Length: 204
Image (tube, rainbow, N blue to C red; front, side):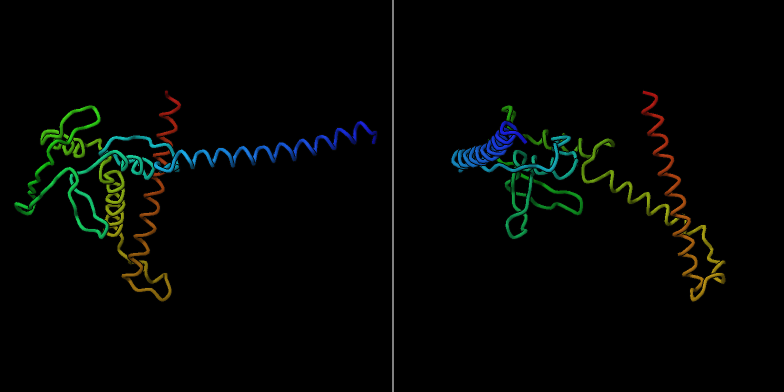
């Protein structure tokens, strides 16, 4: 190895160490400046980009965390789990399915629009829309479908083949058959959904 090569290698190592020290100093300096400037501000990193900020849409934890910073509901929960007013200053039950709420006065949206009963009613209408994802409607539909499939499979299963199983009753055999039939049906539905989605994307 020549002197030039050794010097180049040494400089390379010294340069690497120096660059690392400079980067560490720069990172520390940036962190200190950020801490000094952000003492009155909380910076929170989300796990993903919020896909939607619509108030009534349930689109995951990231969106829910962001919306909590600038949206308010009629009611919410206090530190001890008690119900407290947010946009509603008082509320009462007028029956099993009827509630009367008094809105706080002087509340305005970011664009200056005043909070009125018509605005609240419109929010409920949007939540009740068939295409709304409020209240985990999609998840509840999936759970309901699964329950329906299991119930159907139980009705069509007789358990008459329990004699082929060891140490299992006729009732147990019926539940075994129900589980197998439900698995077959769900597998077919999943395969059909994937196939339809693939063909739909290819058709675009």
